[in-house]
Length: 96
Image (cartoon, rainbow, N blue to C red; front, top):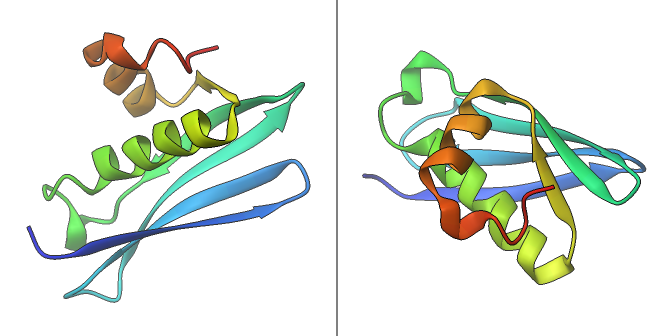
């Protein structure tokens, strides 16, 4: 896989993780809304131009790492994030 850089952008009670892929101008996104200290992961979008490269999983992994570092819980809402959490019981420490 080519290089993927994940950046976090947040404002008040919402935010997103953005995946920048080295060989493309397209970006992937995982958006969230915060309520009562829980980040509800509500949408994951990876355009076809950068699909099938593991970008969506990298976005979820970034959110899990951020949750561990900054001590918040993640509530999977988006179907992709729900499936990723179900495949990774080792993430239950951050699952709301």
